[in-house]
Every structure is written in C-alpha cells, then in structure tokens.
Length: 174
Image 1 (cartoon, rainbow, N blue to C red):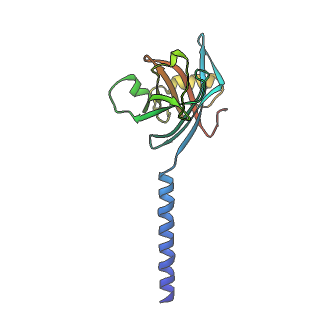
Image 2 (image 1 turned 90 degrees about the horizontal axis):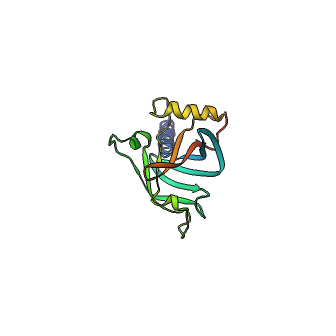
Image 3 (image 1 turned 90 degrees about the vertical axis):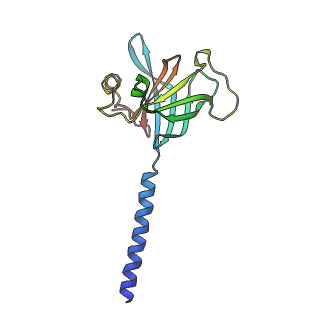
C-alpha cells in the first residue's frame, strides 16, 4: 500500500511538472534586436547606431523600442495588431502592423518632420516560403549576415523610411 501511494505521488508530481514546463514553453517570448539596413545608391550597408528591440509573444508585441537619430529619444508604437489577409502587399510582407508613435518612456518627444504619420510593419518568421526571402537573403549575404529572423520597417506615406533586420539574442554575423 505504501509503495502504491509513493508511486501515485511521484506520478502526480511528474504530471504537475510536465504541465508547468509545457505552459512555460507555450508562453515563450521571442526577443529580437534589429540593425538598420541602409541603401545608398543601390549599395546596402549597416548603421549600427540605429536599432530596434522587439519582444513578441504569439504575434502580440510586448515591447518595442526604436533608437533612431530621427527623434530626440527612443520611440515606440502604442497600437500593434496582427494583420488580417486583405490581399495587399503590406499584408504579404508583414504579419503585425503598428501605429501611433510615442516616446518609449511615455514623455513628450520631438522627431524629424519626415516621421510624421509613421507606421510600422513586423514580418512573420522569415523562411524560404516568405514572399521576400530571396531579396532579403541576397541583401544579407552581401552584408555578410545571416538571413534575419524577422524584419521591422517604418513607413511614411506608404513608403519605407527605415528597415531593420532582426535577429534573436544579437546573433548577426555569419
């Protein structure tokens, strides 16, 4: 009888631990740091002074920090949402859209005029099936980088003004 109770207790503890582990795995956040990719006369480069930091949990943006010389302090977007399939190019390229630019610390800020009305897109995980995979791979290969896990782009008037290649845990070089 004591052995059976001991076995049942061990099985219960094991089951509880497995449930806890599976909950933690399913709640895993994705953390990225993005580097700015610049295009100067058709030649791509990297600007390490400007970056983005993202924390995403199941297509929900938990944290978004944008460090750019286009503003006097770090920025964020307060309204991010998962995109629905509407057939647009923006929806083909991005899975999350962000609007309403604010300062990251919630206080007043100033930005360059060209950022007025800015919005952003966050791509899905980049795989060979992603519509822009070949172009992104070509750029990243040319820069000596791995293909990014995601991209983050800031748009104004339907035109990209910033594009960041985002990598988990700062892994960027091949």
